[in-house]
Image (cartoon, rainbow, N blue to C red; front, side, top):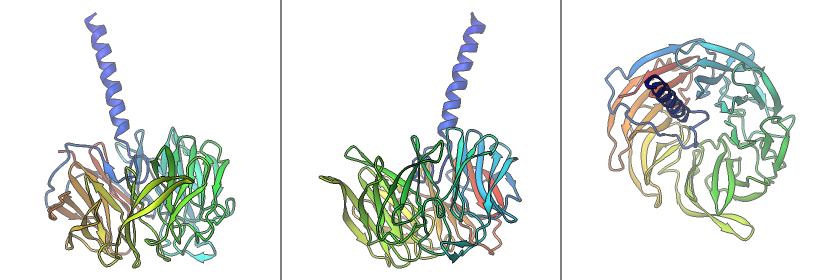
Length: 425
């Protein structure tokens, strides 16, 4: 009986640990809720001069700006390898490669334009229920078996869905899986956003947005307002809100959009949406309100571009305050009061170039374009740096992929290298 009891307890503990481990996965861009916020605790509050301990690193992944995703004991990402653009899978514990699947040839022309920064894919694979969904620079959208990397279905956002990009940098979206649907942004006037059956790739609906101007560089973010689910993303001319059931355009907001590259993923909280872009556009807080014909977006405040414009790297909400880098190709770390738009503080001096940001356990993980990695307190009164170190960055290509934390490990991609640091306290 004692042995049986121990077996039951051991099995129960294993199941509990398995659930806990699964809940700490990072299966898509900006994490489970697309908020760039990690729920883990017990992490280091300060780093030594050389940075946290390097657990392992792997090389020769191929070039690219794809941020890794982590699920079910594996790490997924995208790269160019020779003339092939593809998706790779690594073992989470060791970094050993499990498979690489080519999804298409390297695309140098997208929407009839020569692609800029043609050093590799920008999209983060999305992992859901044993499948991996990835989008290539030229619009190749694939569903892969997560275990073996076999292609289940494939579509091209331009050729099959009439899509187009807003400018020269190629498709960069990290697609969103919601229930039975996959949501992507081809960018065409008749198919600005599209819902596909995630199992077959069949079209569920197409959202028409006349004058949208092509797909932006952000990724779909969901929000629920008044019992209605809405999908949001950037086009060239505006941020749009689309009815999740029907594909109907509910609202559009143009003031914070720019004509060059709308990049940062909006931040959602309750029925509020914070959005920001660079190129002298600016930032805004929108309140989504139920209306007779669906939902409308009301501007709460607007921040002029001179005070806050997020170029790359995004913004994260911690409590009642937003944190992110300010400036075009700049990352002056900034704290903003969420409901009022008040700038609480804004500082430079950690690293140079744009700042990709992640929140975990009271701290901000800031990855700068020049290869500087910094740990900063999420402190609304002042900037307090608790450590920084240099990644092996050669200065030849921008250091852009976002930091990821999963199960006490910090993952940093630098072109064909992936580094895994131990940040557990």
